[in-house]
Image (cartoon, rainbow, N blue to C red; front, side):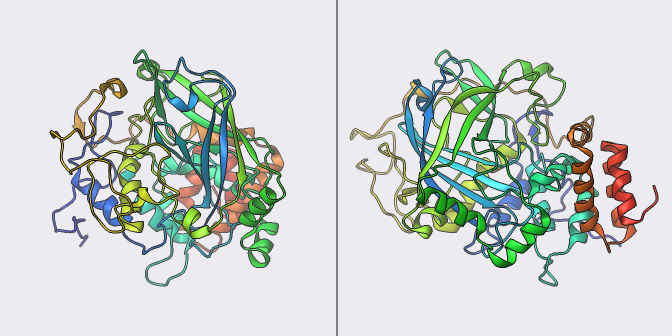
Length: 477
């Protein structure tokens, strides 16, 4: 007899695949207690290593504005051409532990902390423009499927492919992961992406939906599986060493920031959901717009204090930059600061690497590792002693939402195959052969009951895609 899934306090769970949202595309609701419990527990599963993005490297640098985008945003960082802003960028692998090799096949984290005059802006992204999931309800389960088997303590590809067989929304990201770009040649030779849909708002209160792209000015280089395996044994810190030594040689790596801009109302009629993290916006519809150049030019003095204690959250945005109804983004707005409070304490934003350059004035008090006191005289507001006050000039324009609060099924009416298929069809025959060989290699030895539904998913993307994999694993389709 099948067991019923319950919360930690024993209540039956009616839905474990879709978060509670205001309308099909609407933002999530805090009353979704199952989602909150699931994310909060997930954030506390490792001590003290990051649950994801554990292995990383970082460097300081500057961002310089090269093009005027003030018609889209009032954010001070973009206020004038030539303006420079200090930053810290942390690269990472995603699924591996802190001692894992830099050359594993895995997405790469691309997290930037901009020290703007109006507070911290954390652009927390990856080296891919999409992700495996579109709903944060599924994120802990996805990561569990990629991590070590809780019974044996080692990674098991059957867990990975068993999960993916039931999650076609991952096909686009999987096609990138198993392609040549799945193993970047260090951190300097890969792009970075905000991945989520964010928003800009300008001084007139107009909102625009935004995608961030950081294009490597060093070009794109990738490692073959054979070289990556050799480096994992001979130089497991290869990417971090390459970054550090290049900066020491004053070969400062650079990325060109470009954005895609969608007028707010376009989202109502666009042919795909622009807030779906598993999708890209075609460049023919929303071309890239040049913004500026990011340069890394100073190595950390203390790895632990700067790289390990760096704490990022997409919830850190200055006026002029905002969120969107992207459900995965909405989940991360809670999960990222929550996991940092658990990992390095309630006052983690007072650590030097995380502290903004402008003054901080609030009513937060006490807590473990309190490093600084606020300029306020007491810890409540409103007050009669001249404490800091709210300022309506920084108010974000209202966000349009509509629809019923329900656990909307994001699979209904959603095409999880076309964009993955389009990407596959862009590859050369040699690239297709390498991609399908890598996938088939990870499937070998698994039960046919696990392999076959995955092949069927790949065939829905492109018949040749699935057939090549099938031939290489010896299954007839």
